[in-house]
Image (cartoon, rainbow, N blue to C red):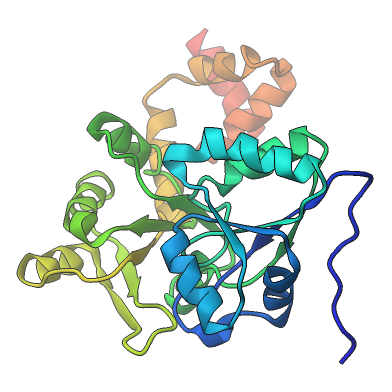
Length: 292
């Protein structure tokens, strides 16, 4: 095998590498990730203690810099200065791919704004593993990450998902799992759900049931470990029924004017009204004559 090389820097600036680390099983780290961690000048870590364990396991001695949510402004600017001076930096999270539900997103944005080259050594993502193994549709899905902690913002976020037809993916801590399940059930009703924990570890577990069953389970059992939640989207047929019901609550004239106000021509608007209501354009035209 030919030796791998780091990307060459452009001009004076160094390169920011986003390095995915294992989400459980250390054997899942890639050869490229190890090469980058070995050769960069600095490793920026969400939790330096956790990353030190990883580096020690692979016998890598590196300069570690703490970079997490509560110091991301100060340390972000420091890391950008280091990059501008030509240093190469690897950014890692506690587990998985940095930049997803963590402050790595902000560092990437800052680096791009400063013309710094950003690249990645891809690897494990708990959300992708979770949805693939959930048994729910994985062709189209939406990643929601952690729900807001503020009750009002949390409620509004969940309410906004009522008509989502794709499989939804959430991350949740064990001490908040029961509250989240109840909030989802209250707003979205009883749906199929898959809960994943301890991914890639010895006691990896998938629980496939309904929201109602999951709530009952964790009333008598204490959740352990970080969870990935996959929730069934609204059935297309049910969504269509809901839309039909909402359109039937207003007149065809009001329906038509709704589309015209959005900039459509009357002809285009009539076509959309016919599609929405499952009518022919002639039926819509005749109904408009009767309403006038």
